[in-house]
Image 1 (cartoon, one colour):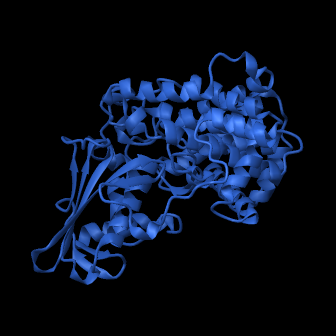
Image 2 (cartoon, one colour):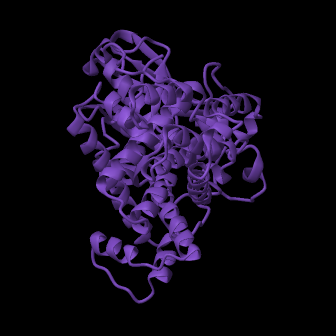
Image 3 (cartoon, one colour):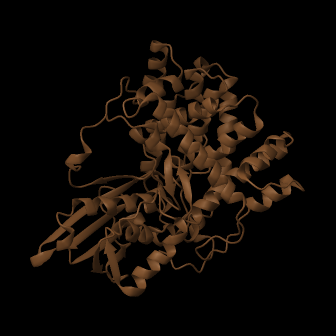
Length: 471
């Protein structure tokens, strides 16, 4: 089984969906890379299937495809410029392929949402077709697996190179705990060692801290943004109002001053609990607004880990940058176990595969920095996931807003509770293992009706009347 870096599970992304936005954006870029000669391209057609078609408009899939074909990078693009770029393509009927080759592109003729067909390999399927000179055509099929991961029907490009093998591969929870015990390492120490298969020790820590800075910046943007979320549901942003009420008359002019104020806040249960919700809401409101977020492990669940991290940073004593690094490494490593043995795609497993997995990751990270043993770290992840089993994905209007945003607050609180329970427990008494709960997630995902897998065809999505042109 191929090793996966913790930084593939936690990485910089763009809203609102890692599968429907980031994955399709990446697939468009890969299609560009597989074109033999851009100058020979006469036209491009894209067809979206299954969940990508059913909830793609609300998830910005069309936007992602257009930006990916334009050669834009979602990790660096000015997110405020995206809407204008897309409108230019639609209004002119021209697309600058890879940023250098202008071709005709008639939306929606050349970008088709085919909701009637789901490809057999995965619910998130898409096909790109380029007409080249002299009538030759190149066609590629890709699948977005969640978390920004994609796979194609064709073999990986040769440039991708051989799969990375870590010094101490751990592909399930039992392997992870056993290896930690054999080497006398914590989960964070083992993950740090394995991450050196990709980057130097200093680079590992630097990458974790870069993600931490992105997380703080995202939350700060969220709590300072008001108004309504895009998409037509008229969902009001709430984190700014919660932030304002909790701070009262306190004033700040910078992110640093804001964090200083947070650390001075009273630590009674109710107030801290409100801050946890505020942090999670802030991230997912940014996500719903096509903002830059940290995908962890998906965009729909991007608020859980930031909320738990900021809870620790602001309201627990003695939390340093080293704790932040350890948290992120452990959370990422736990995420890889779910990715390898189950799914992190809501289109395959419902929201249990997104918020549930993120809650497990956050619980493990928190248990680690609070002194948990490898067994307690695994138990924290198990407890958090166990109490998300069966959670459906039923986005109202196909938008990553209702109930997605609030679910991140719930996932964060469950993660903190799971970590606390694990730290007060003897793991040898546990009757449910992390591997058992991961297996159960996958079995539940396969049994779950497709209406509850990011199709907007069941659950809340059909109970709430909306006027959004979706599905």
